Length: 180
Length: 152
Image (cartoon, rainbow over the protein chains, first blue to last red):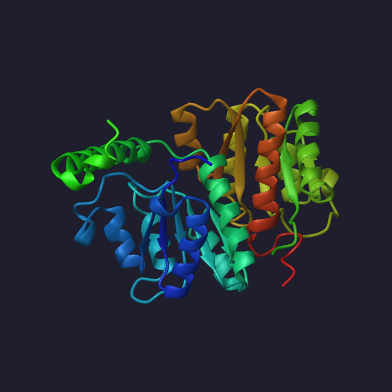
């Protein structure tokens, strides 16, 4: 699995979010997944605005998109992304329970990269997400112009290690745990 | 789970076509695959004309443009598909050996659904083709009008 995968999961159903994160946890992807609950939040994330104005820069490798959501739904978000020069190349896969022909047709019409129907139970759902993560994370070549988040993640983890080391040095109770 | 939808493979090189078909066989998709050698033949298939006149109606669930087809011809085929109101929803995957950033940008700008880079190593390529087939053949829901629809 390519460790640089970053997923923006746009999903309003708390149960589906929990299920997805449980699967990503098993695939060791949970830390690289950001969850937002509707299209407006997704736009804020992608444009680093609103509550995401201070987030680490970079665009996700994949947007997993539920179609039926409050406020801005998946179709509206897809349309906004595919008509925005800065966002249109990000691969978007609809992850939905709808297999209705008009939904599938509309999603492709708006330029979705893939359309995957959620499995009916945890085992199915896990297999679906595993296939998605493997293909879009490891097989698909990401569009150019994206900040390589892996480097950011490494820098962040180094800082975390440094912070922990500094905390250990400052805290005598932790000295026995220091091996350096 | 979807039924496998027909794959249209566009690949000029016979050995590469065989490699892809081997991988598709592992994914049990080989019986649902039509392979053609180039852009004109692909368009003939898609429009059900010339040698494909009278074929079952419908479209493939995915078009895979192989790595040995000249890059320019592959992109021209992608542009043909995206410029045709009846074909433009069909997912298109381009497979290339060592693409540079400009090639990747062009492919996405022209509306490719996915671009897959492969190595020169035959075993590695078969593995990639198998994963590609697994995803597009089994996991992805094709647009309405493809030859085989999902089973539920």
